[in-house]
Image 1 (tube, helix red, strand yellow):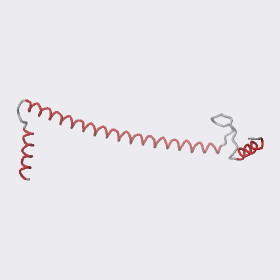
Image 2 (cartoon, rainbow, N blue to C red):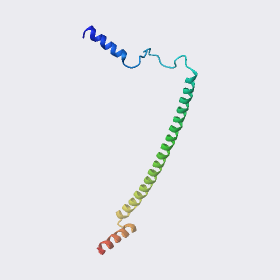
Image 3 (cartoon, helix red, strand yellow):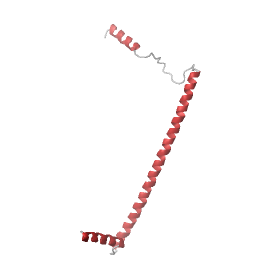
Image 4 (cartoon, rainbow, N blue to C red):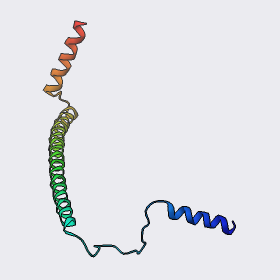
Length: 116
């Protein structure tokens, strides 16, 4: 690349977009005007509104999760009750007795087969 090509590239880069001073400093800039204070108030109000909405979404999310947990706890309780019932049935069968509930189920199934 020769000198003329480099000069063209430099001219193009300075022509593109607004010129920005790359000072590397962050934060507030000195010399803010009263018009900027109005913008700042609007920005603060938007921030407050955003925070309100965020808290509302968080509250809804926690309510949903609490309902989900309650439903799961009910399901666990029902399954434990069913497990206990099956354990009692297994114990009765091991002792050589047919549980009444199983007898009824077998009779119902037998009646259905006879109907067909």
